[in-house]
Image (cartoon, rainbow, N blue to C red; front, side):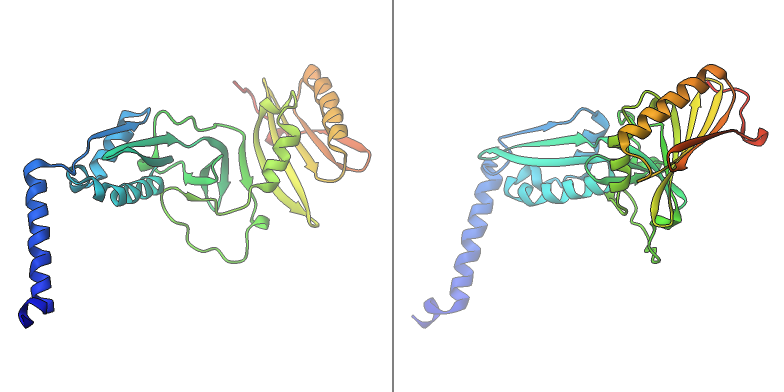
Length: 268
């Protein structure tokens, strides 16, 4: 009787039960997938999913619940995608894989980064991350000056990762100016600081003309600077030539010719 009550006996019974269940599973495969759907637009991404997913996850669906979390996390760190898996029934699952939404192109810390609307970023030069269907914006290219970086510069992770810098200033600027008629010609914007105020150094290419525009936050009401710049640029478009447009003064916009070294012979 003492043996029957011992921990060793209980361990043997548990082992026999587990072995019996596993044998039953191998014979009838009752814990394999009943149904699985993967919703994704790009075949190359679907192939990567199947390459990563451990085989045991297909043969034994309870392990898929944990395995899918690991696969999703790995894919989101190595590709510009979001991965969500949901259980649709007993042994049935659906995995949705969606491309991120590219929003900004930012030059920062000696590299060019794509920033998504979902708040993640990746190096556009990284070939392992490129997906043909992903529409990376070509312009404007934002350049973030060192004045917006902290004194510490920890090493950046590789792959796709959460934003490493704030985009609040950029977002605020876009809300004010991106609907302006001239904004479609903007090729580059340098974000800098002057005496604590944000300075936007804009390169605008209109046909064969080149403009360098300087805007300082707080000098004008938004509607006033948009109207004033629109009026000035409309006149300069008609005149031809290349110009420096300084809107950092109070109550006036100063226009001067760009030096020859800064002009261009042909655009587009």
